[in-house]
Image: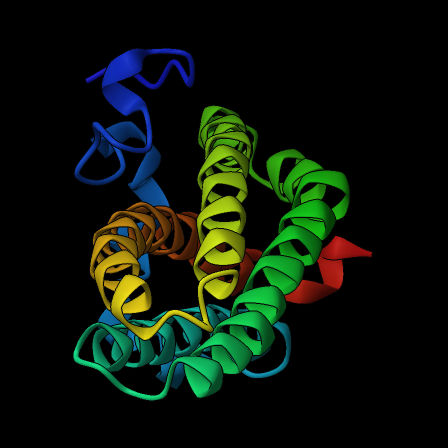
Length: 194
């Protein structure tokens, strides 16, 4: 498989993992051994905890959305969706901005043979921006029907499918990012990030 980040087969919705050429350090630093590595603590642990928090927010939103589709209090759901959804979108944008502007260029310089991988992750961020914009639009529309319980139930059921798609795309990106970034940091240490 190619490592060209513009190859449609490597798009966020098309790929099922990183191509072998971008997994070279992952072979030396498999996921099962990350926590035992002396370079794991600090930035690596923090990075993975941020990813976990994104997954947890999506899981909460999924549960809350299903409850709303089943008839739970629409006002309570609208407040939870606004609070948690806003936090998810804001934190993802901030996280991706720091990665694109600071971490990815430095990591790419540390490990030039993986430059295409960091370009791929940057492209994922742009693809995710579109999904997040759709999420915000749909969430705002859903919040707008909080005073109409029957309509809320139907809209919440449709929103659940949208959340499932966002979760699938985000998880693919997070897994691939972890499998590219963490081995580089374990191999080189975080001090090289400057």
